[in-house]
Length: 315
Image 1 (cartoon, helix red, strand yellow):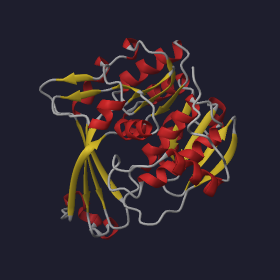
Image 2 (image 1 turned 45 degrees about the horizontal axis):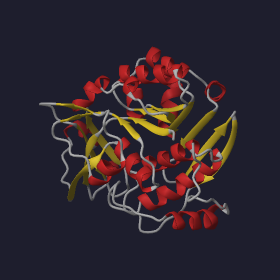
Image 3 (image 1 turned 90 degrees about the horizontal axis):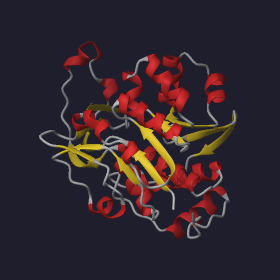
Image 4 (image 1 turned 90 degrees about the vertical axis):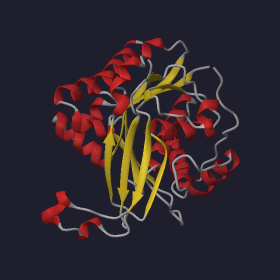
């Protein structure tokens, strides 16, 4: 059996809500801005953990490469479903923490403290003994990201790079090094534009470089490019939305699973969109649930596609 490998930061998410509108704040004194939050929640987070939860609900047992502090306690679902033996725990250090402040219009400010993420290099991809079918390397210590990408390329393991918030921290040379290594690109629209600008690449350059490019436009739609040809994947309109912050992580989970199961990539993106629609009506990234039968029915209802999630490809 081939496994999904996820290399990512592991963090606690701290979510605060501001009942006002950031755009109405005093722009002249924005650096001295003070607001009162009407709610506060802290929960297991980090993009990998959000992906992990969604993949676990689908019956997979992926492998995690990450670094945590001595304060991190993995949720029971992840302890049961994920291979955590390659996680490095750094004593006497806090785990990464993300503070996300949203306003009434779903605008957000995010502050991220890397903490033990600085020791990500201690969780090495070369230690992994299991056979890998696909991997995703994303926001982490930059040097570690490059090391993982080089090893995966050498071992001919197909992988996505999702540099996310680390794009702004990379030098142009570091970003170009990653671009030369990775197989598939996945990013939201803002990150995609940032990559093009920092790497001094046009859209034609990007589409020529990667066999698969997936760009999301928040809760509206996503674009899938395969060998330069674009396909539009509409979002599912859902009532009672609680928070769209985690939908992007749920989306990634489906793409990884779909590709390791040899599904059509467009079908994987459609499945990804269905899963995201469940995620955004839950208050946190790891509190939604679904049945495989329900997913199959939603695929038929929204995209007129029939899939059998019970008949998984065996290796």
